[in-house]
Amino acid sequence: MEESVEQIDPTQELTTDIIKKRAVKGAAILTGRMILMQGVSFFAMAFLTVFLAPSEFGVFYVVAAVKNLLSYFSDIGFAPALIQKKEKLTNIELKTIFTAQQVLILLVIILGFILTPLIQKIYHLNLQAVYLLWAFLLSLFFSSLKTIPSVLMERKLEFNKYVIPQVAENIVFNLTAVFLAWKGFGVTSYTIAVILSGLLGLALTYIVKPWWPGIAFSVTAFKSVLKFGIPYQANTLLAMIKDDGMILFLGSFIGTSGVGLLGWAQKWAYAPLRFFMDQVIKVTFPAFSRLQDNRKDLSDLVTKSIFFICLLVFPSLVILTFVVPSLVYIIPKYAKWSPAIFALSVLTITSGLAAITTPLTNTLNAIGRITLTFKLMIMWTVLTWIFVPTLALLYGVNGAAVGFTLVGLSSVIALYLVAKHVDIDYLKSVGKPLLAAILMGVFIFIIRNIVPLSLLQVIFMISTGLISYILIIFSLEPGLLRIIKNQFKK
Image (cartoon, rainbow, N blue to C red; front, side):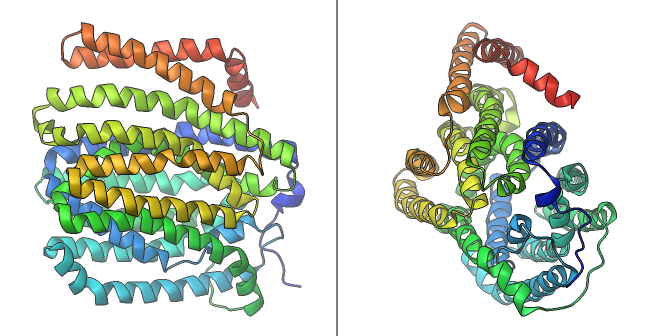
């Protein structure tokens, strides 16, 4: 039998209690650490929207969407399949997946170069934008080389190591992009930032988790991965069509400036999700996979995960809704984004709904209910392609934002379907953070109407909001402070 490359089999060595504790503690710690990474992106975006025109911002979104669509064909669910697998991973399995992925990624890169003239013609891209597209293609190759070391870290829940390349890559990308944009490099700022950050991330990944790449192929190992990987990747394809595909379609008739405004609104509205939810999802997927046969413990952990996400996302969205419009009018160079303020406000609703539904679909994938996730994704994709283009044609950027929100409201169907497989206490996980966020919003609204428009008003709104939210949430959930203290002591 092929010798395992894993020193510890997480399935056998990690008890249910340890998995739950590591998942909850890991989510909290990772979120705290990743605030640094996302904080850099947050402030970098603030500077980039000053230094770059909406059209340049739109070019980045269009090219990134092309890259994301192409990246779909560079993977067939390899990483998730390996992470979910209960048995120990063998060297031949890892090398088989590594080999298959490199073949796929090279084909995608070649396809990207062949399609460049067509893409350039459709979106009227200049030479700078073409170079950015090629840089993104190169970044796909860098990412493929990191797959196996990343999988090994996730299976052991070694997220303290996992985040090191991510944080470094994020900082280098944003600092490089902001500095070069400030110097007037325009779209080329992104091109250089993509290449430098990709190289650094690749090097650091192999430093924190050494693994010697090799070329091999086993039909048995490949088939075992495809059993889970293909359905998983089908969901990813629909997500690409629903999101990035829609951005590409909108760009063909509302232009790069329109896409830039919509992208700006989405970036701000989805920032809390990137800040908090993404990190929790990264931790909970391998944990949920190991609890898929224990419904009670799984339900308990899912409830805690949703509560933790909503606890942080909901107040952030309320603050954004009130603060960003003030900043747009206070900062002279931000006035160009004022046409997207309404879109931002509407999209915060979509973001709040995603804070609930994304952990649920993540749970369904972890317990092997990929078919159900696929049906939900079909529903969301069809609704997106019905509502968003129609409303965008009628009302432009604001219409597109309303379309995305209408699709998000259909998430109530997901709550009903998931309840058949996992028992979740929505009153605790969603109800309490939502009530606290609404009451906080009332206090911020009062401050906004009392204090004149100024930087002082912004400071008062943020400070009043945070203080009131903390007091309210601890009143609704008295044991929260004790739970937080206990988690960090362990």
